[in-house]
Image 1: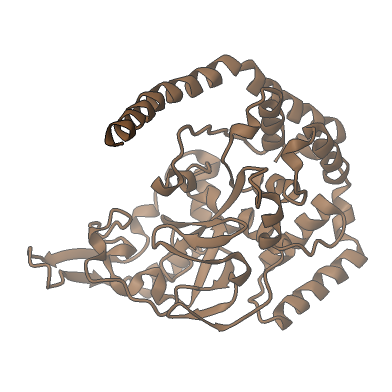
Image 2: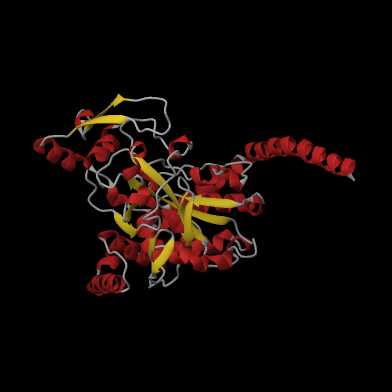
Length: 391
């Protein structure tokens, strides 16, 4: 969060913030985005004002989030969310804890409320991210499907399926809205986007040691392709070797994620065309990959299992790689967790340091932008001459 604040401050100082079309957020960066887009013209104001406002909130005592009054508030909010028809999990409590840290009070805004900050193109379009854990079992360790959240829509690019932001969390079947629920508050989405509690023991081992645990190859069932041909109208034959009860228990112990967010699946009931595996978005050519089995594709699930996208790739680049977005330059800024951001002096120092890093690389940034313009100008001039030739 502090890294993003500092980077935006640096870009504003260089006069480049207005040239940005998108800002993507992963994990803690979504905290900064959610706070900034409460204001309709935040990028037109001095970033120091936004940083000062957040500094006063984020540096509060952590204990203030766990007073008896706050615990009662959290319990009441969970009951209200369940009454509205939404699924409830412990991650929702994490979301309202973040709400207290960022705002100090109840925040009733929703994702679609951010439209006021982009409706006139006055700010870059914010894209927050999460990943859907595959397959239907929540204990998978490797397969993720990126899910993106904008003020206008929420969807999974892999399937090309999107719903209006205000309808995310409602119940759909075959693309029809069958049961409308109130829009999910941004506070709950913050818990989803930065769900640090989705790590399983296998991932904790990799995080602590930097290596793959020795037990990983023995987890899960064994799948082998035993019969195949080039006929597109037939399906390949696979041999499954189910795990024993003991191995199944061990697999569950090492790979089950204790806390994930469940959301009604807006793709529920859909079936993909028989040649879906020809699409580059799918990894159906891998024998053990969920994409190889039509009945394990996400539309077959009644719910989505969403977690912090940092568990897949700790960068927000995937959403802007979509060809439709026509991005010319991607500036990928990598931030790491730092406890100092919750201290009064540390928060300001970290944002200033990140801002200075951006400003100190002014020449490299301008050089990259210049190269892009050099590539685009000849193409545009060529199109201009062709138009004149046609006339």
